[in-house]
Length: 145
Ligand SMILES: CC(C)(COP(=O)(O)OP(=O)(O)OC[C@H]1O[C@@H](n2cnc3c(N)ncnc32)[C@H](O)[C@@H]1OP(=O)(O)O)[C@@H](O)C(=O)NCCC(=O)NCCS
Image (tube, rainbow, N blue to C red):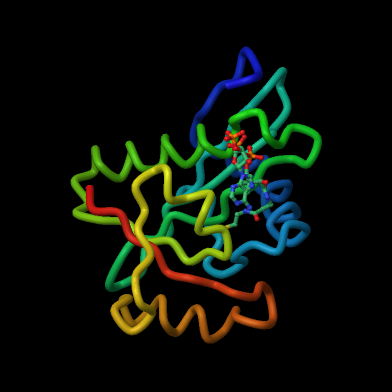
């Protein structure tokens, strides 16, 4: 981490409109947005990063990892991803999935690319809705916990 004094905690409903605004700005997954799925990073009283574990009927996806532009490349995205993985582990989830165009970013955490045909149905359907509209080159990755 290249920044001191960062607190990671659950998102509060009163700050959630700010998270939703950034999700739109960063072209992230805007479906089924619910504050209780999200964690945030706070620095000097300001919300600087966020991410979520998104539940589906057939799997859980780590997603919506976003960092305010002026604080990128300081380790905040990694902090959020690591914390979400740890929370999934503590919950006893067997695995988590990601749909992303940033394969190289998520590999170091242990996520491995998977053929889209092998992904849970809900993720295949999600990719069909997002590919080429919200983002391009979306791949599926999985980590076994
Ligand atoms: C992607 C994002 C979350 C990364 O967060 P961040 O806090 O800037 O990144 P971190 O500081 O945690 O990690 C930086 C490292 O990741 C690498 N990295 C950054 N973007 C990358 C990418 N697109 N592909 C591969 N590696 C990447 C950097 O080179 C750096 O490597 P280093 O640690 O070896 O120097 C952030 O850029 C962001 O919010 N982007 C817009 C939203 C987005 O695209 N989210 C991901 C959607 S799946």
